Length: 107
Image (cartoon, rainbow, N blue to C red; front, side, top):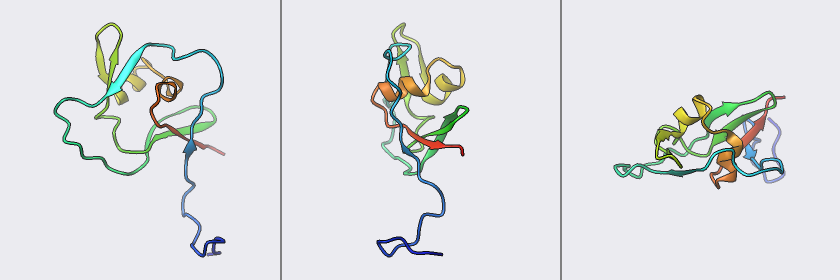
């Protein structure tokens, strides 16, 4: 395996890059993302695939999609994973809300 200029081996897998949504309007819905009151504070430092589209795979920097709670303006709540799966929010909404989202091109 060839070495990188810093003397280290190249990564075995591609690393997702921070996602910056294209210019446009703000989030499609108003919401806040936070942790539940009983969260123990433990984070698993690994990229977690949260969704994909035609061009990219989108990741969170930690395994938190089932922990993070999305609170909508109408008072309803859902885990981030459920909100994405039910199309209540999109990856663009998450990035615009300030959540760290990473993208990896599919090609």
